[in-house]
Structure formats: C-alpha cells, structure tokens
Amino acid sequence: MSVPEPLWRTGALLVAWGAFAAWCVSGIPPSVDLPAHAAQMQTLAELVRGNPEVSAWYEAHFPLGYGFPIWLFLPVSLLTNGAFAARLAAWTGLMLFPLAHLALARTLRRPLWTVVLGLPLAFNISYWYGFLPSFFALPLALLALALYLRVLQQPGRVVLGTVGLALLSTATMLSHLVSFGALCVGVAALALTSASRKRAVGLAALGLAPPLLLCAARVVTLVSRAFLPGDNTLPDYGWGSHFNWLLRNYRSEGVLAVVCPALITVVFVGTYLRHRHKEPRAPWVLFLALAVLFLVTPKALSGAWLIHVRLPVLAGVVSLLLVDPARIPRPFKAWMLLLVVASLAETARFHLRFKHDVAGLETLVASPPPPGVHGYVSLVGSRPEGSRLVYLEHLGQWWTATQGGVGHHFFANGDHLPVRFRPRRELPQWMEGTSAEQLAPFQALLVYGDAPLPEAFTGFEETARVGPWRRLERR
Image (tube, rainbow, N blue to C red; front, side, top):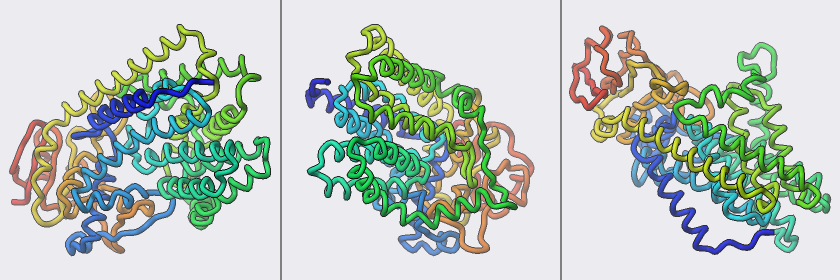
C-alpha cells in the first residue's frame, strides 16, 4: 500500500496542470466543435435575455442526455459571453480529469504519480473534436465510480454516498448518454462481483435509478431510431476503426497522444497479471468491463458519430490503478514519465502552431457584426495542412460566441442541443462560398484564407483584414 502523499505535492501538481490547461484553451484552441458550443452558450444567453432578433430565429430547450454544460455555464455566459464560458468549461473539463483520477487513486490507495501518468489522457478525442458534453461527462463518470467504490469500502456512509452517486450519475447522464452508459456498465460490473453483492447492488440501484428514470423515454427514442427498419441512422460498427482510427487520424496532434497511454496501459496490465493474487480485484473487473464496452460499441449509433473512440480514456485511467506501482521495475517508471513529458510537449507544440496559423481571428471577433445574420466561410476547406481533423469548420462561430447576434452552423438543426431553430426557420450550415444563393441570408461574413474571393461574394465589400482573415459586409 502507498504512503499518503504530502498535500503540497498534490497542490503543486494541480496548480501546474491548471496553468497549462488555461494556456491550452486560451485564444483559439484546436478544438473542432468548441466554437459551435460557445455560440450555443451565447445564443442561449441572448434568448434568456429576450433578444427579439435572436428569438425570431432560435428557441431554447433542455435536452436529456446531451448539452448539460451549456446550461450549467449559463450564468457565466450571462455575466461575460459564450466564448469565455466555453473556454472556462473546457478548462474545467481538463481540471476534472486529474481530480477524478486522484479520487480513484486515493480510494484504491495508489500514489500521486499514477495521476501524472494519466495526464495525456485528458487530451482525448472529445477534447480535439470539441465534444464539450462528452468531454465534461467522462471525468464525471470517473468521479461517480470513485464515490461508489468508496461507499462500498465504508458502509457507514451509505446515505450520503447514495445521494452523491445519484447527483453525479444524473449530471453525467445530462451531459452525455454514452458516458452515462459506461458508468452504468462499470457500476454493474463492480456490484455483481462485490463480496457484499446484495448491498452493492442495492446501492447501485438507488444511485442510478433517478437518471435511468429520467432518460428512459429518450433512450427508447434513440434505440428505435437506430434499429427500426426504414431509418437512415442504422448503426455502423466500424470494426477496424476500433484499433486504427486514433493512430490514423492523430497526426499534427502528436502520435504520442495515442502511443503513450497505450504503452503505459500495457505495462500496468502486464504487471497486474503477474501479481494479480496480491492485488484487489475491483480495478481489474472495472477495467475489463470498460474495455469490453469499447470493443462492442459501434462507431456510429442513432445518428451520433465516433461513439467508440470516446471510451478508451475511461479504461486507460482505470488501468493505472490496477497494481501498486511499487511492483513496476524502476526503469519502466522512468520511461513512462519520459513518455508523459514528451506527449504533453507534443500537445503544447500543436496548440502553439494552430494558434499561430489562425492568428487574427481574435482581433476581428472583438468588434460586433452589423444587424442581421452573420456567417463564416473558409476558402481553404475544413482541415488545416497536415491534419485529418476538421479544425477549421467552426472557427467563425467564435464571432457569435463573443458578440452575440444571429449566427449559424452551431447544430441548431439537431434535436440534441439546447438552442434550436424555430419551426420553418433555417440557415445554411457549412459554406464553401461558391453560391450567391447560399450567401443570400447573410449581412456580414468572416472569411478565412488568402485566395481571391469567388464571384458569389460580389455583393460584399471588405471592411477589415488581419492576416488570413477578412471581414466582409453587404454593400
């Protein structure tokens, strides 16, 4: 068993990580959908304030199973703007990962440096793609698992533990159903293999019942959409992508972001198998449950995309808790720490490069658009050079997120986020700027790219330019 860590070490780690995370999410971070969620946050704030121009196009909802962070950070959006609220939410998500890992580590009496080994897992696909709801939900699920294990160890805290589990599991469900499903699978596996099975199952049932009852109708709708004949959202399992999607698509972000956690997981699993009779069974049961869940989860389900690759991070965190690290040979520990440093250095380098490539956007979004609908066009496509992820697709939504007004292309045409189009209202989404008809609703545009403007832009004039960014307004 590990010796308790001095409090100053934990504090120093969290302060250093918090500073690094704040730098990553500052300015224009490489997080695909984050600007769209930021625009959702600002538009929701405008609707709450009663802005008539925005209310003519959009309406607010409280969806179950997705989008809870957008409502959770509404007070921040009202006090500042959606851009700041989204960056704060992303920073909070980055901070929740080591905190959730630390909660699990202390419950299972593992040392602080296992949390250090898990830091690269915070920069997972939900971060790079800007899936703010799932990015927020993953550490919430880990916190709920830590609480469940702690209550199993300390029967005297059943009442408080049950209430806490119900709150955390409900927050997880409201943020993202996939993470909530993973939480349910993990809790069920722990309950069914517990030495005091009856008490463990009862605690699980009481703690998970509120969110399960809340989302039951939503789950039925999603299942029927996914499997009923004649629907165009049939599941796509994507067997090969379970093993090669991350390696194939993580390029500019850094291959070490995939290789580092995978190699460290192999070391911990191998060490556990050699010493399994001397280690607690619960972490191994949880790891196997989450690993199997990843393998059986489809790539796309009920219209949701890249479901499976959001789940390995959960198994990766739990793998670091399988065994007392004192059993791992010293040379392996040194190499693992070097891998972590190298992975985070690659992450920092990519953030620096991306912020340089899109420099100028912050300057243009600092001034409000004119009345009417404003939009965004990229003349260089949606993927920056050398990357397979569509980082450029939503960059213009930082204008809506910062200044408000009527923007576009932030998923208002779906039924899973809080802000949606009013009936019989719709605006173009992703635009290539080749059609004057497509540009007709817009009074102002942000344009990315140095190429000459296509003929469709003849009705606009340039009013500002910074680097590769141009601001256009109707003549």
